[in-house]
Length: 252
Image 1 (tube, rainbow, N blue to C red):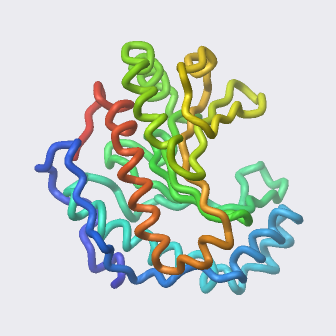
Image 2 (spheres, helix red, strand yellow):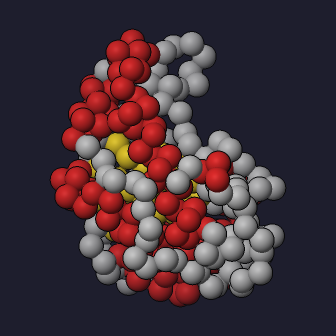
Image 3 (cartoon, rainbow, N blue to C red):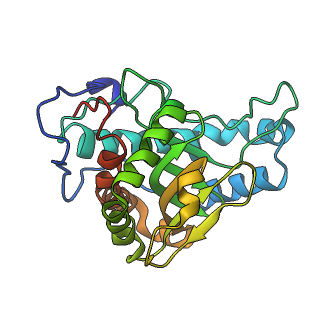
């Protein structure tokens, strides 16, 4: 199924707390290949446009086209059944080439996130999906260009720290989840085990992440089942998405 055959947004009628996810999902995505991870590893080793140009002939077949099919499966199995008013097509993917004023830098990962149509991907709370040389990640992020939403999220955390901690720990009790945050250019502080209390540093963070990390070999073994695993992660971070945006205009 091509994304052009699907509506980019669904009408809003179901309350935000009600996610409807198809189980088992109907998939056109067949899985990632070893070759895509090898290609991204070469870009990590040589993160420059010259290496990008060497990889360019295979970019669509190995990376971009499968990722679009994965995106389509998220739309069919999550966004449309849940009747979420998300932009699902325009500018949902990141770029491999860096915007570094002609220096020719290149990323070693590609990621995507849907966003509410009145804003932009980088300025919204992101439920993101990312492939890199180490595997695949699904999770939630607030920060960077979404400064107003980060401020709001931290206010919500200050208002209800116990509720927020419950949501975070519900993920950290499961395998391969990480909660991390960063201030300025410092290295992120990372937690992989449930927390007894919320660290004070969260309130000063410039970015807050909660992600499930799926290692390369596991991703290859899953094949198309990666979609089901990703949707499970989406369901787990949805309460935090609602928590961050509870005082914002959320169309769902």
